[in-house]
Length: 112
Image 1: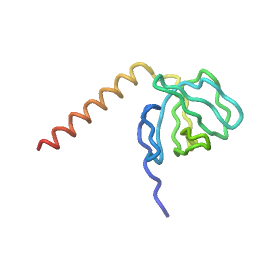
Image 2: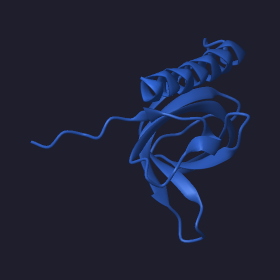
Image 3: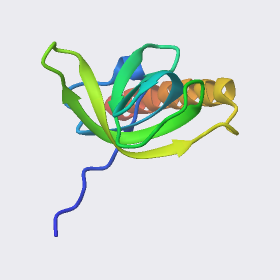
């Protein structure tokens, strides 16, 4: 049995092709059968899904990163979670603080 690659937390503008699986939180700004567009304030990304997602909802998507034929990155959703109770502004602040902390931590490790 093979293990899944862990999903990494990302803001949409930070998603890279090297990311195999990501975990992003954002607001659904468009929804159609088989797909939705997710926006987190840093950018938007197309999410392929087999379930109906309501426009205006705050959701977390865990899925595999792929590239479309037009060169745009998209996410193939494996899991979608309703996050309407999350204080999204507070989440973004904590995310940025964690990112800063990791940056400082890695500098300290490099300096020894």
